Length: 489
Image 1 (cartoon, rainbow, N blue to C red):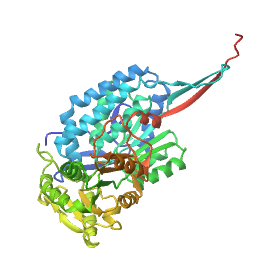
Image 2 (cartoon, rainbow, N blue to C red):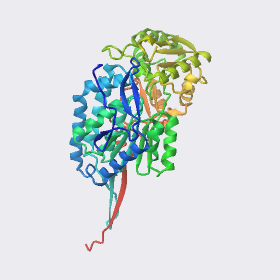
Image 3 (cartoon, rainbow, N blue to C red):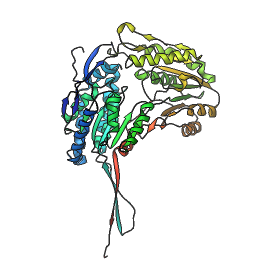
């Protein structure tokens, strides 16, 4: 692994290039704190160059002018290349952001490839419409690519989040400028190389690494970007919408934070599965998932039994070197995030929650960023750890006795991304699923998912949906063509 080398330069108009002003920054692995690459620190001049390349590619129709079936073949080849390079991509993802390599390979690479393939397969199966008018008219309703799409993705699932955006955008015929997180830029740059190899023309897919204020903001403010798609924090997402309005009123789609409730009733059909899901879902990816079920509501009559089972599972998630094949919990993405998580843990203790597992940094001697899986009992609704998104392996446990009250508590959040509930009562399942203000409600499971269903949230969890055919709506313009027919017949 130490022999791997990474090209940290941007990819603009089919060429690897340094930042125009020559600036760069170190990419530091959270696995051991070592520098693994030097990355181009791009700025507004580089964003402008990438947008010009994307616009030129769109205007001369080198990609959008191809028949959908032709774009499909290239997208499928793109997906195939991800799988052909799966081991290298997985290792890169692990070195860059700390997730266990077994999951980087089995989940991240496979999911990204499947996403590219699915949208490639879908694009020649989405039909336009004819409106039901009188015989004096023919009204066509057609989709057109929106043009140049700016994409800004986070560091927690670099490949998957990029694929969720670029796959429907490219399949629909758009040109794309992708700004990956400065915390995990490496796989995005490799995706750009593979896109060229697959046959996506130069200028159609550009990747420009850099920091948010220096590269992300110029992309969101650019007057020649038609659409900006962002996944990240609610705080930055609000700024994205403001910048979209300040500039050319570009379409802005944001997938933002979450503080997802997971409600377990005493009539849960399988308590062991509920425990495994509650623990596994909050500790997967070191808790760095926007949909992580970080608020666990357990009916009071079974809470002690539930926690006893949960504590028995915690040792399975002991952090270890993510490069080892059996590791299930790796490192947080960097020291800044680790310190943030540790501050939240301290706030939980200081506000009176009972720390019953974890709560500290571990493996400090490695030079990496590791935090023990942490569980708080005795959490109340007003505590910081019950209200704010921690983005780390911290589970807050609350109890309840009344169904209506727990739904009220679950909905008492600025977020509305996902939710879970466990019950064998079909009426309760449907009724509470309808009452929960969340984009996805999991019933008797958590985290089961598929590319065919939309992903997104209510309230301050964002605007728009990733995944499924609904994602095409984000990257298309809907046009009506009304033709008058003065028929002599």
